[in-house]
Length: 297
Image 1: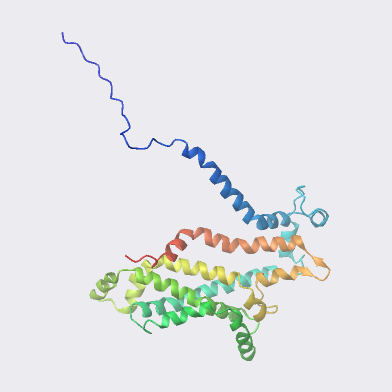
Image 2 (image 1 turned 90 degrees about the vertical axis):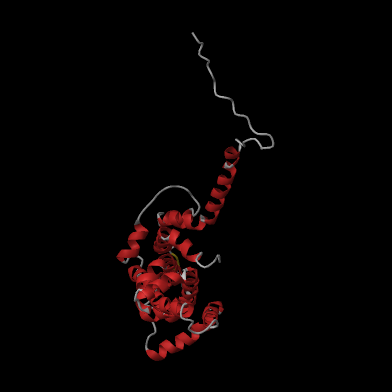
């Protein structure tokens, strides 16, 4: 009988010259996570304080502003919507939504054909895009007084359409710059193939180019919405009561008799939610759209 030879798998050995596996790296990474967490808390401390203050009674806020004694209430949020604050916050909020969404629609409607004409059709040469985007470098206060005089003469002062047009004018160069970079990143052979199949310029733009530009379009929409929502200069100059957005309306809680900290904190929290949700849900498309055209192969 032949004896069966028992074999054991050979022990693997680390080749000479290779560094040993660093098992302690995951253990050393905890301090980085802790550092980032502390920095994030410090940066967002004002917002966290506003959220906490919005749920505290007025007596606790005035007696001990920094106290952590939990007596929570929803009274400040009820005041905003039932008229208890003395101001129509619902109208301010609706004005901000209409102004921001209106600016987004107008910027996209204007920049899509303009960007395609400049990049693909050579309209305006190489100087038109530079001239338009250079307007973004001009301080907004430079245009505030001319807009005020123009709207007064046309009867558009303190109207929502006037603020939509103003924010469209301010954000048009940014939208055009982002879309032009995304168009340059698209291979022109796709459009040439569509034209050879019988598509005209408008059909090529609508059926071929726009689906490929979806991330850039989302990026433009998010940026225009954020900038229009947070605009204060044009809102305070071009509105007085009817078209007042939340950025100006929140300042109404500062009265001659005192500051209504609870109501203004609740207004701040509600004002931050729409742009925050908009940016979070569109984060991936925002990053992809902003990086379009940044790398040339």
